[in-house]
Image (tube, rainbow over the protein chains, first blue to last red):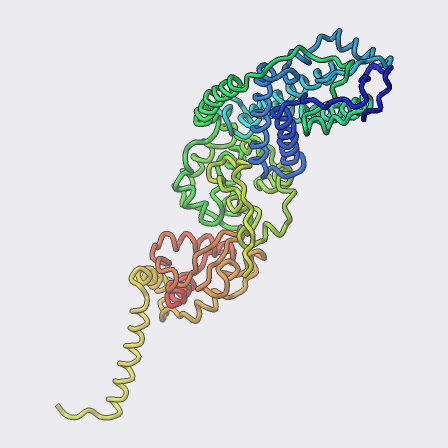
Length: 385
Length: 145
């Protein structure tokens, strides 16, 4: 890597340039932990089923925490960690591009203007992904610090934004890797290695930045204040009642009568019209006579209609609003149900611990609450006899 | 008192033994179940003056019989299994406690509940209500299981 001609703008006069610390230990640790956290967040959402949501959230929280620490370090870290060393104007960026085009761009010891712009873009997109994810989580799944505030429709919109931002992030990552490879070849120095051991060659023609000492003590205090401020606030917000989520336990008569043969399906799972049709047809209830004592039937009907899907804002309350015209009373006949359970083999439903598609609570541990959180899914294993 | 004619004595003993065994069988049925059976005795007598009593054997045959009204549920044993001491399962897959009173002592002690389930399940399996004789035989069979 030291065979750079002396007339090159990236050149070093000496034959063997000293390798000096450019990336401090925090920057390196941050970089590779961020790679791991983002990889985990993407794997647990784009590749693995939604039952991995818990790991996805852990990865997302880790990503945001890392970026927050990086921002603090960008203000208080050593020379090349500082935003001031690599944040440039659009004019500087164009100038750098023009120099690259003409092959006269000098080597930057820290981030070059394009690299610096990439760092800012990555930080901005990651923060936006975290924010939109938190809004989506609160609105669509009624989980997390914003569950009290965000309605389902806004949550779904945030979910789409979250997904598109992730595709944007994947694009930025591709460009970032391509840029690192390009710059490694152009300057004949392995930049991946530099991000591992922190060292880059100190060449005479390098553009450097004004040296800055770091303030690790102050940075630690600020990060600690952020943790002490944010974590309890998030915990308090998570305790606030979620918007449009049923709070009351299931009606006792309903559970006793309807739960005798099947799961006492939460009233929020079906619209009022469907409940009315079910209560009108108990003499032919999915092939069985399920007639009730008239007083109990009336009480149950009143309960179901008063708590039907229209009155709540959970994901299931929205998802089952469109019945399958061919089989309008059956939740498992809806396209929503089929899509959400497509990754499961049919044997799961016939297995002894599950029994049938109608046994929601075999896997959804919060079925009785009507929430059906992805965090509460546990598909039981069939125990060998 | 003159000594008893031996053949009369034998006949009396036989009656006593059969009475005792009948009592034994009745004693094995809990009071809750007996009240339900008594209700069906009265109903069976009302509909058929020649009613002679319920039969656990007829009840067993009824429990296992295959009917044609509903291909999904041809028999009581479709959900309750052919062994009433075993757990059953609804068509949705929810477990049903065994029907045999020896395993589920609370069975057939609440007449309203018994009537509700006969109405539902007879209509489902047979396509009609069950008669008092069928119900009484059924409860007698399972109360002695």
